[in-house]
Image (cartoon, rainbow, N blue to C red; front, side, top):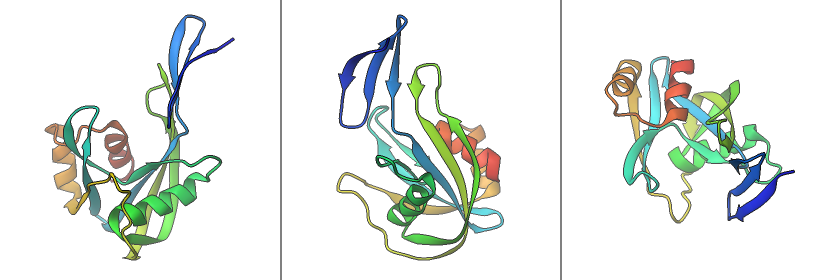
Length: 156
């Protein structure tokens, strides 16, 4: 039987069979393609590691929220763009050794102007990169976010 150890705004921490694990609602991840070899990235502060990181747009699922809807919303909120076409790539767990966070990966194309709508605590820079630039950024450690590395390697 699992025992609740902590309940926060977003996560819960449980102990089960002498193992601790974190329950997370899951997330949608979306890779926005401007063209065949150009992708929009967002740079934002990540307080857990005290660094700014380049990432693909992503966001936490609301309670009962469809990941496709979340991906569409996060794309527009973080980049100010809407996708004419969104394709599901796959779903994966970010770190299943201790974290129950399922991520749903999408590819966005046929981008159109929308309306950027950042949360009060979001500080985001948006920039377009080429496939070549992104692969170099992964190899040289300029992209350090695991979901972004997986998303780019699966869609580029």
